[in-house]
Image 1 (cartoon, rainbow, N blue to C red):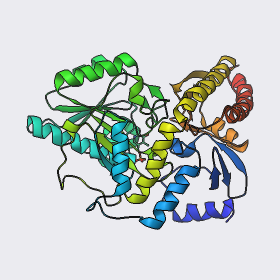
Image 2: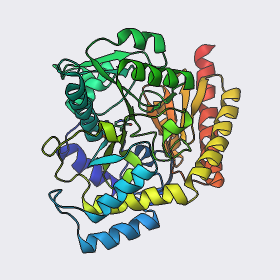
Image 3: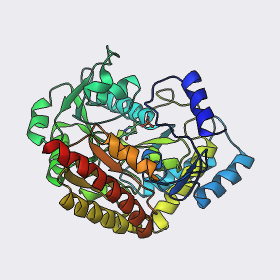
Image 4: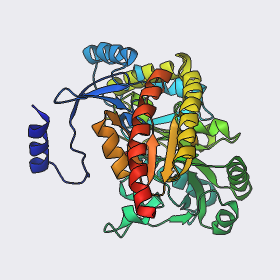
Amino acid sequence: MKTGEIITLGDRYLMQNYGRIPLALVKGEGARVWDADGKEYLDFVGGIAVNSLGHCPPAVVKAVNRQVRRLMHCSNLYYIEPQVELAKLLAENSCCSRAFFCNSGAEANEAAIKLARKYARQRYGTGKHEIITAHNSFHGRTLAALAATGQDKYHKGFEPLPAGFKHVPFNDLETLEKAVGPNTCAVMLEPVQGEGGVNVASRPYLEGVAELCRERGLLLIFDEVQCGLGRTGRFLAYQHFGVEPDILTLAKALGGGFPIGAMLAREEVAVFQPGDHASTFGGNPLACAAALAVVKEILHGGVLENTVRTGGYLFNKLGEMAGRYSFIKDVRGLGLLLGMELVVEGKEVVDRCRAKGLLINCVGQNVLRFVPPLNITAGEVDQAIAILDEVMGGIWVKYRLTIL
Ligand SMILES: *Cc1c(COP(=O)(O)O)cnc(C)c1O
């Protein structure tokens, strides 16, 4: 099918819940994708921080190929070999020691919310069920994950949402401290907020939050669905901050494009018992084989080193650009999770970049987000920067006319 035909069918038959861009991708390799008409793009969206090893990474293709012929699915009624291997690998490389597998970020957070409530009930009795989260957070679209999400625009029209969530400003320890009450059982944060505009937590803030949680008997939950698994240049984002969560959620990059999520917990907190929680597909053999290949590659394939080096390179290039165009307000982020805040809307930049063969996206109205594969080369960054610079030059001409 050509692009036009795919779009026509999509507009006719799909639920219209996405503001879709008129583009249909049919092939990918490394940091490049091709649309149905054969046009090539450099992909700095990467499935929104999913394709961390690029498109169709050979190690993952090989692992999935092998597993698909052996056993695609079996129930969690039974032990699953790649699942126990994946759980072990994640335990050995994080502060948590037990894993529950699911299929998405929202599900991982639902599991985290349930586990926090169960732990608090078991330990302190009823009533202690409230979870505090941050403004501009994003935790997913299922009802409890949505209630946890600290952005009203996602709540509108779906009330009543599950009770038991309170939102406070991000990077503001004092307000968080005041929000803790007798019913609070946990604090849930993204060390780097993704959908909320690429906002990095400060080290003193997270240290303070961890200390507060210790003092008040609260669980600390980190949602690393977007910022985890090498994206920031460390295997897990919390490793930048010298603090450790009690519960950690992962998804996006975990399967290298194959759907899988995980909720990890410290031993003492891992209080789920048979019947407490489950997922039919969660941690199935195929998904775990993919994830196992991904995690090994991130840990041992030079991915973290490249993320630090090339992320720093991209950050500097974006910073230089900000020095040249006054409508660029800020450049921020960690590793290869970078944002560029504009004083104008980002949509036109995104559209113009796409026309020139570069895919980026915009979070909120005005923060361009750059989340390319973690194995991207400096040469590919140069290509992306050349396109972006050309586009920014065009936007600059328009912007000057509007402020004159
Ligand atoms: C994307 C995202 C989610 C939701 O993940 P889904 O797989 O879409 O359910 C949750 N938390 C964060 C931080 C995310 O970026």
